[in-house]
Image (cartoon, rainbow, N blue to C red):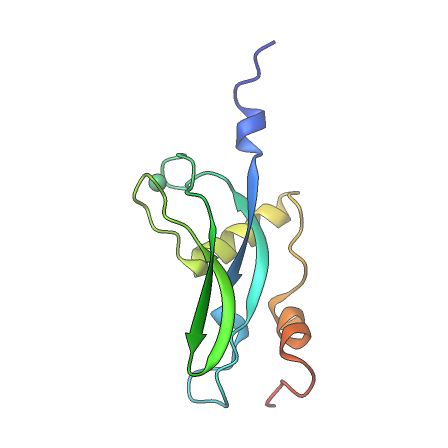
Amino acid sequence: MADNSTASAAETITVTVRDRSAEAPWGVGLTNPVTRKVVISAFCPVDGQRRGEPRGLNSCDDGAHYWVQVWANPCGHTDMYEAVIAEAAALAAQGGRPVSGTAAELARLEGGPGNTPN
Ligand SMILES: [Zn+2]
């Protein structure tokens, strides 16, 4: 029996991205990159074509090293991390696999204790 929509529509990928919203504002303390693993659709939100294959990328920002994943979509649309994080939150809210915590919780976990300036 043909089921041509639900299987592919529910297909997701897990990627590690940088969450700047969980980091200290510019000019406040040292750069402390916050990364998080999120679940998003395997397909481009604009045209529904399959996203590119994620690959790991070691990055360095102001001497702080971190590892994220990047991917190039064959359709040409660029996924910004902010949009990816928003998509993951929406996916979790509608019953997809939940993200592993709030941005603040993850910042605390990954940044260690004493990470809250105020
Ligand atoms: Zn696209």
